[in-house]
Image 1: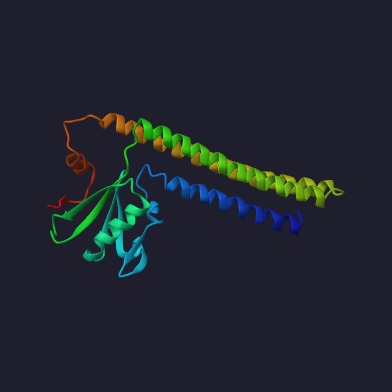
Image 2: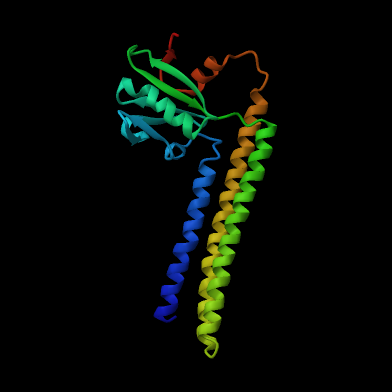
Amino acid sequence: MNSFIESEINDTEKRMTGFRYLLTFRYMNLCVKADANSLLPVTVVVDGEEKNIEDVGEVMITDDYHIAIIPKKAKNLKAIQEGVADAHPEFKTKVLRMEEDEDSTFLLYEMPPVNKERRDFLDEAVKSLHDECKVRLEEIRAEELAGFAQLYVAEPEELKDATDALDDCYNRHVDSINEMLEDKQKEIGDAYERYESTHGNDDQTEEEDFAVMHSMRMSDMEE
């Protein structure tokens, strides 16, 4: 394979990878299980200055469905609340305090429950986003293929090398986004099964259920 073809395939790889990363970001923000990366879009305004969440708080994944944010400064708790609410209004929030330090408070975010309605919405959304990404990959492949066909119209061996390399690049990215779709669909299915298994269970309160799942010692903050 000549250096020009290698350069073109490298550029194609970068373009396709960009759309694959975009799909990853979009899936990440269709929040099902707790993921610290879902807080990347959050901006917290402190003293008139916008800051990232990691600048003002420590993020902890406490279990599959809960995220805790411990403010680095107590005065920033409300600003963190507002920032997360802007990015993820669907998150359920509780203000808690550590049992070992009653003066230290933190925020606990629970991922929205996946009932049948939300499951159907998420299933449709992840499939639509996957299909959109695949169309983008197909467009890039078609564009590059047309360019190679024109450039190497009189050089069939070079055209075959270029086409084979292009197809390999395309197939790898399609396989990757297909796997991402399957993983996200399983995540949604698992969350729906969890909802079905716990919905209507009056034997255990929400606080008791969380205490079982969460290793940090804490108590509800008094109003």
